[in-house]
Image (cartoon, rainbow, N blue to C red; front, side):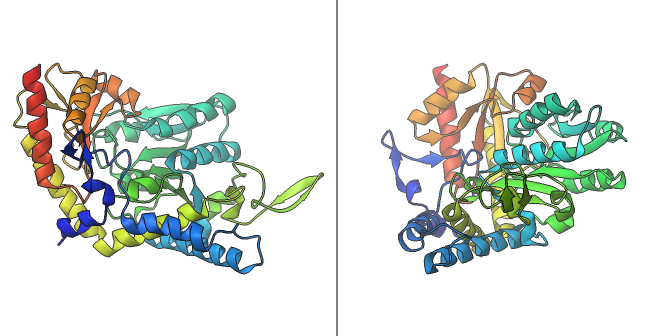
Amino acid sequence: MISIESIRKDFPILGREVYGKPLVYLDNAATTQKPQCVIDSISDAYRNVNANVHRGIHFLSQEATDMLEAARDNVRRFIGAGSTEEIIFTRGTTESINLLASSFAWAFLKEDDEVLISGMEHHSNIVPWQIQAQRYGFKLKVIPVTDLGELDMDAFDKLLGPKTKLVSITHVSNVLGTVNPVREIVAKAHKLGIPVAVDGAQSVPHISVNIKEMGADFYAFSGHKIYGPTGIGVLFGRRELLEKMPPYQGGGEMIKKVTFQGTTYNDLPYKFEAGTPDYVGSIALGVALDYVQNIGMEQIAGYESELCSYAMQRLGEIPGMRFIGNAPKRSGVVSFLVGNIHPSDMGTLLDRLGIAVRTGHHCAEPLMDRFGIPGTVRASFAFYNTKAEIDTLVAGIERVRQMF
């Protein structure tokens, strides 16, 4: 059983006021707040073990290296991966997918090949593939989204074919909250020998993820969405595929030997980690994962599901409420419009009441086009949110609605 009062005390920012009102933070899909232990770990790392990793023989360098690699193993265990060689530290989900798109395309894609994505993808899982498609001549195919906000799996079956070289799909939609059937997608793709990449930015903070059970060949997520610092992320990749892929960037650390005649690349995962890594961020991410594990992902998922259901119920009582996405299997996010009120107007006025929500297209413009809307208001939840905060949101929306 989650003790909300105790948990909220771990997050200093939740005690502050905005415009003289208690902060109600419901923008967790954009970034989560940080517990004191994560904040302290960043300060402690700079204060006590600040030294460049891997290449130093002195005590501080070795200690920082050990802490970095312990964090890498922590990530491996958290997502159920088989080896630390398959855990690459990046700046976040966006860089992870850019790395994947660049290196995978270089190694495996050619003209008239196809990469399959979906109509509910974040721009980070669209634009990198478009860039590489312009370079190599392969085609992007898109799985349609139903009126409920689910993937059209019949269309998916028809799109899979001999030209498909990769499926790259979001695990949980950052707009709709839809939890996609990634195991089914992986199973169908693997039957045809097609690898699958999964954008886990919105799933890792909310539901238990096990790479071995899921079967995904690549999995990306960001530290700042799971109570860790900004600027740190992860790309998991299957070793046999990573070994065939060229480096994304060149420089220090990703090499074994450099001459003017040529360069020998380093072993995994360092082949994809050019330059000085954000070892402090990696250490803090490890602390964040420990914090989440101490609470328990099952407890987190259960409580957040209860919160989401309560939000749907209470918001549904508001006249003119229109939910965008009504998939029965959802996580963490409710997107909506109220009457003819523009989402930006709603968000601005809620902000004056101390309520932080996200408005706009949420880096998913093709999905907005699919539903014929300019954007939505999005309330997104974390385990430190409460039903009382949802009641405050509902009261705030009612107040804004009456103004219009």
